[in-house]
Amino acid sequence: AGIVLIVFAWIVQVEAPMGLPYALYAFAALPAWLMAQHIILQGAPSLVHNQHIVSKVFFPRTALPMSKAGVALVDFSVATLLFWLYRGVQTGLWLEGLHWVLLFGLFALYSALGLAYWIAALSVRYRDGLALLPFLAQGLFLLTPVAYPTERFASALGTHAWILYLNPFVAVADGMRFAWLGIGHWQDLHLLSFWVGAGLFITGTWALKSVERTLIDDL
Image (cartoon, rainbow, N blue to C red; front, side):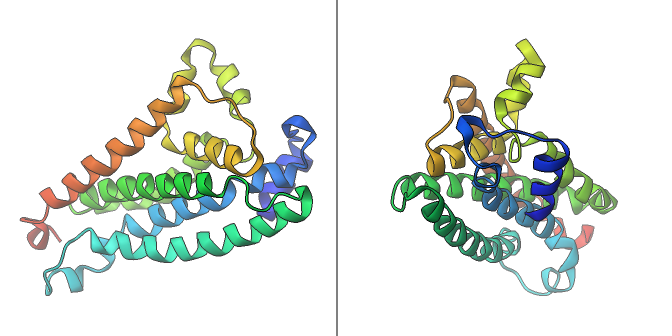
């Protein structure tokens, strides 16, 4: 959180809209992103890292990434509580938007799980690809408008702005700022992010189940 504040507020000098303090603006979406990042980094390699268990005990393979999601959910809950207190002190708002926070938090959870499922399924045969996982997470962070307004990136893409919304975490970041601060303009392209997130979870679950038959031999 401190690094985000130093880099984007002091060095890049990103300004939050509507005169909001930059810390309040950026930290609104940060807990959800950190949860998603934890699920991806820890859940994706969970089959390979626990192959000694997978080869001896039969259980749903989705349980391993989900166990990492459980840990991330606890961290998200604590971070959300701290931000709720921070927002309350800064704005005097205490109960507004909490139902939206739960909704977009759940969407972030399932989108990250879907991506982790896909990577976990592919890593069974292409485990060397896991070395690229930290670069994928860092790239997703830069492509997700956590620390800057979505419009800033979308306007740079011009007529190809829809490409940005192929990232489901764009809807998560915009949704969290809408939930906590009541700012943001929803548009049809946000539906694209929602569909991509749902598609990742559904197809990722299928991909993980499809490798179960040959999982022990491949590992």
